[in-house]
Length: 201
Image (cartoon, rainbow, N blue to C red; front, side, top):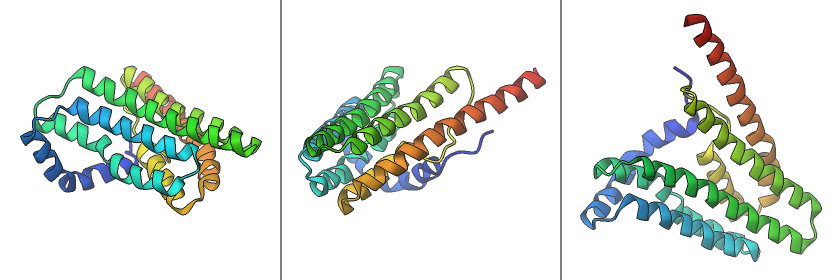
């Protein structure tokens, strides 16, 4: 059994606080996939304001919409609507949500003429996608891979804080470094796990 990330522990802790919202959604007969798409819509709207340099407003929007990323899964389980497509849609929309955020940041730095900002955006999005890819590929091969310094929850939390405090450049530096380190963590974890599996099989 691998050591889980901080985000996994936080999810378990916050679930009881989100359940009242889930119960309301069940009573309203809201489908989990609708919540998933609404979460993505929130990221789109936030990205629109990021592109204009309105970071504080974008951060406030993400505070409201980001928790929907956890609520859709809880809603699916509580309403017995868990499906392979729902899980696939959730993961796919998560990736697109991050992509549109980084696209808007890239656009912002292009207007500012900041080459360093553009490079950091590229490093940040590639690192973020590799964190997700390494887990998906590992689990596709049968290895649990939830470890890492900077999983999605940490990335979104840091993004919101940086938008609110207008420290987006510092955020991109940290993201560019620690997402790639997280991907390397997962590569090393799968390597070690596969060696143990080979010995025991």
